[in-house]
Length: 223
Image (cartoon, rainbow, N blue to C red):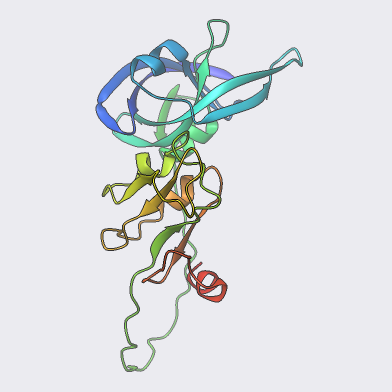
């Protein structure tokens, strides 16, 4: 259900200086964020793939999609945007609102911070215990056999410390499009690349990891 319009800052995840402010219709009945394809292309945002959608009259249509960084009134987050065609409405859907921690105030016709909850248990103080030996912080590992390489590079776009690079010259693993690899000594274990990998090809593991990858038990333990 379309309610009201808000100005939304859309930026390229790889270069935040490439940004544009557009008016989007807040639509809690839609999941997706729809932005004019012309705007996304002008910002240098490349499609990460295609998805199929059902429109109001029951037709099935295919649209390109890409990850973008969005911001509204100081609230921001990463979300997947649809490359809107001229006949598509420009929308700010429920998923994008949730990514920014916002909800709709119907009475005030505005967006407001959404309450967020965490589960906790109140317990009596436990007696002191010896400090356990510290384990290394988990790092990301990308399976070279499953990575689609150059056409995707979503993990590179979302890495905040630039520790992921594209490999195209490895004769053992690299196919025609290469694969992405994590520089373990730089990885901070933020898990963003694993969260947003469209192929579920990234796992968090205990370092060090050899070229052949983590042992199955180690990978399960780290996950």
